[in-house]
Length: 239
Image (cartoon, rainbow, N blue to C red):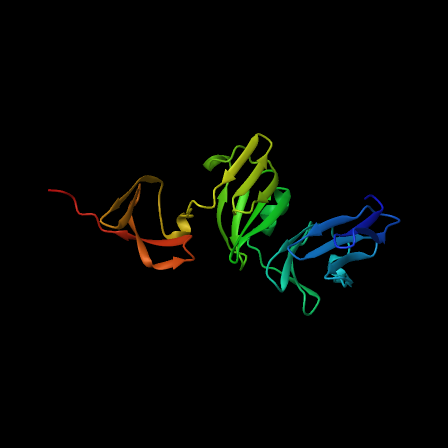
């Protein structure tokens, strides 16, 4: 509520007041096993049946907390408005800077939400530029926006259902990424040069024609089935 955080005990059918606030309305964040909330004192972690008041570094005390995201069994990602992502370690109970390649992009385009898709893939959203997909090391591997199928760049919410489908709420409608579909991000970082003109599969070879040449996939370089590398191949003229 505006003044308190409550806990409901499903076994005993009871409600307990956990914290009461005098100055600020609490923000509550949940992961798979933990509950976090912010108040006048800082960030409180509730795990199991125990509450912990987290020690926030001085550099973050005046920064607004925007989101807390499940990262692994030992860590969560914490998003601050000015300073970006930090990783919180449950063992050491400390914060460390998470090197996310697009921190400035999220800040500029109004961060909304981040969710974990699997062990090595996350999706984050903005109100101005759609979605970004990034790996657990913080590197960005692709995007989804109005240019490639999203109804609107103004994303208002994000949800992953029990079947791992990604539901994207935008100002112009709802988009869904079906998890049963295998999607691959291919761009200049994979070695392609020039605007793509055509794609064809011939005798188990994936060939991509661009305005600067023809490329084929290098099957030995394949990172987690979602990032590929390509090499330029020599095309001999037909005589």
